[in-house]
Image (tube, rainbow, N blue to C red; front, top):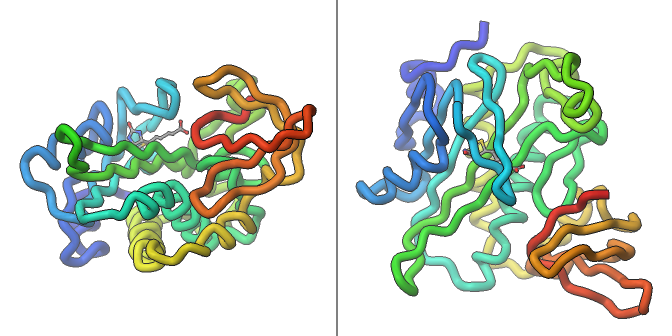
Length: 253
Ligand code: BTN
């Protein structure tokens, strides 16, 4: 039995500030509200069900009750601009490593921050920066994990999405996995000032060496995904021979 409730989370997460909702519109939206009400650094919002989950590039994200993890981690401390750029890598590496603690199957990253299990998406991450004028107030790292969502009846999603539990030897206890993720985020945040953390990120990426088509705000880009730089930007070799640095985008093929 994989209950998710306030008591279990309190026992698992120790003294960390958190809010649990059995059903919510979006944990990222709730995190924005809590930040307005003074949430401390490291606080987390967790929900069993999300009815209006938000994904990257204005997509929707499904979190059916009892079957998934929806959590949003609030970071509220001073970040150097170079550290802010590395947060996508921090969240991706943290979640990937926590998932590796629960499955022996292949866990890789699809740039910039999709987590793939045996080549299919098991987790999506939505990082939002909250500004007040020119000042950064907080960062919200929203994490959605398919734990036992059944995609078999959905031919479109079944091709590209998967769940964690069918690929583990033990049933998943979501509270434990949430705590494992938070521990890895804490670890990688301590590494944030180091300029070489992209080496670990690079090793986890399945994207490098592939011919890719990217949807970006500047339009479509086609080329060879050659490398990532220290900020996590993707370096794409175009047919013209030029190297293009892509900071925001989505690999569509
Ligand atoms: C993506 O791959 O497009 C990112 C999906 C992010 C979904 C998570 S679920 C928890 C948090 N709350 C949201 O509304 N979105 C993120």
